[in-house]
Length: 166
Image (cartoon, rainbow, N blue to C red; front, top):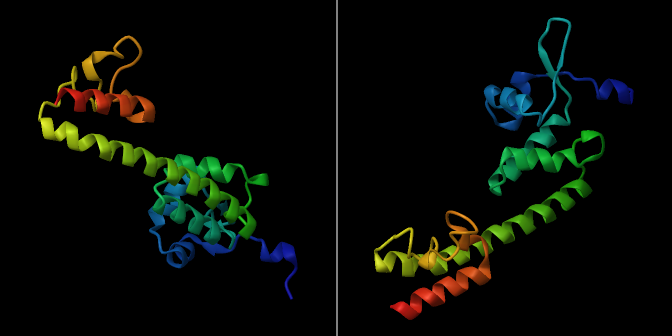
């Protein structure tokens, strides 16, 4: 039986990892430049990976499927002690965190959905009077852009304002 240090040696080539993880070699290089995975160089200056990189790539892919950016995934992975590959318990924590983020995104999209009908229905798309953007330009002193979308209470007030005019 191989010693633990031998099992942990980086032995997988970039091609082997790409095939087993079902990603392009260029994707592995990209992940590495972004600090999501790590490789070592052998005596011939070729990249080599530890086997646990496969789990790390699986977590990256799962995070992306949930709509997380690579920056968000990297921040989440960085919370692991010694930037290790996630264990089953780590995955449980990460998935709960990402589920909470998904809940926030869903709530945001539901607020947007509630406002879209009125906005598109009126046809104005006015930056000065459209409730989707900034009704009556009443927040011009505070912020620019679609500020109502990020604040449920303000979005509701904007929708009510719009509804009362139509």
